Image (cartoon, rainbow, N blue to C red; front, side, top):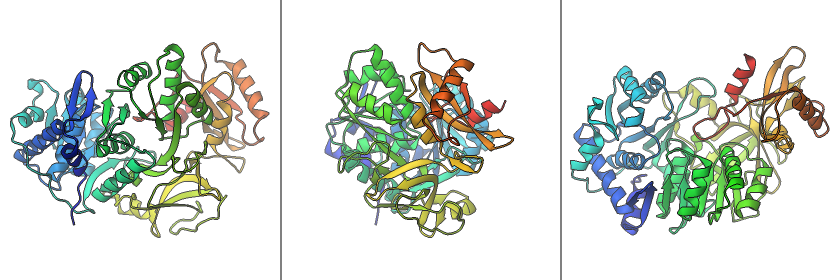
Length: 511
């Protein structure tokens, strides 16, 4: 039996050769052209000694070269290792060594760190979108002269396709091993529901392609449907609104910070794209933002839940059943989600509906394990379930709500406080534009609840406003929950997909 992620692009190129696959600035690539270029990349890589099973790292931002290199490596039968585009040389060195990469394909603008990382790891460096004097073979030039391979290499369903590195919230990043079956199943299931992708859809591709949300839910699902992706180098709300209007985008995928920024941009720009549906993931979306987006754009946001280790989609609100704001919907087809005791190690004990516990998952989406980490794999793959590290609750109708990360939970005076619950309340304060709740050390209570706030225009941050926010929240939250401390920042530190980095906030508050 054979199965390859490369078929996602190959089949759409056969079905819809002349349909636009990617629009990037003034450049438009049809499916036939994109697949041709990918096969030429595969040929060039083979000529440089890369073969099936080799790990090929990609250090690239959002440009058409990413899907070309991604599907080119997969067509050759190689394993793709996307590298976070903002990493420094030592971090790139770590990923290359840990993944056992044979080669690094690096975009010209990222060569300063990429070249140092490749040299430190002793890995061959190939460039794209670079000057001739970059000191490494120009893969895009070599591919331009190469004869394309005839067909993608056959792989087994259980063979590795992609190694995606986690964000490293608990130490150094770990490589989640995703198989061809993991990704193709997640794409096929997601295309039908929740994403409901059709061939005439146009997606704004503003999420980073090296990240699982932008790569698998966005690029791969869009290509599987034979639809069009309007690609942005990086997200900027005003430009996103302009592009979605110009190209008549029907689908948007983003993280909560993007939705907040789009609403701010819409207050200054009266243009509205013909959006049919929008999808949110990565972190909790305040219900207030969901409601306001529906009012301003006339488009429903479907919130869902996934992880790098689950290829990534686990559960989503979807058209198949009533949307319940504040939840992440029901599990997608072929995936089981339950709630288990979070305090047990080494075994799974499931809890009844309505109980708060650790979200556990089983199904076609669960990774093969962490690369080179048998102990870490054994910790999370228990009794046939994947332990997510997230706390959640499942109601009697099967809707899942994510309460918080186990590690983000604040324990104040022996009481468990879930930051997401506090954030959902504080976002309704008239002076609060964005809020992140974290725990800070306290001599008496162990931890204290701290709200970190970005204020709305027209409000002045300071002690007086902080006291008013504390008093306001005390009226709306239990005594052990409301924040006794409020800090103000101009902007939150964000990860590659726009997720607020609470670790950095906590470190900042500790100084």
